[in-house]
Amino acid sequence: MVDFINKNKRFFKPFKNVFFVISVIFAVWMLFFDANSWFIHNELNNDKEALENEKAYYKSEMEKDKKDIQKLSSEEGIEKYGREKYHMKKKDEEIYLIEYEDSLKDNKNE
Image (cartoon, rainbow, N blue to C red; front, side, top):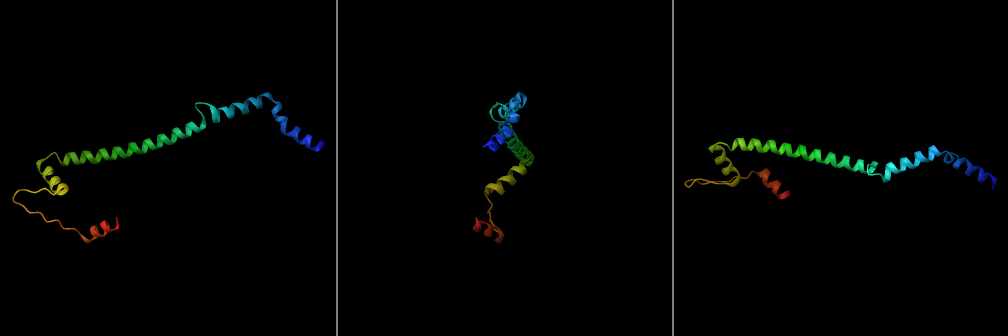
């Protein structure tokens, strides 16, 4: 019984120091309960990283769109785009679409 009491005294000895107790309470408060806690900072950093990735994606999309706009700025560019994307044709033309074997295999796998 005496040995158990001595072990408890060694365990509780640091808690007799007021500065240690206040430091522990402050650390627990800052880690878990404060508005600027570690968990909130971690979550905000993850959100920031996701937004930066999204920003980079949209910048690359904007560059692609700018290139497309430059291509479409001329009459030939608009005509080429309409023919390729929407299979448009002039009144006196016929269009033949040729599908390659590779594209047929890709369509079957999807």
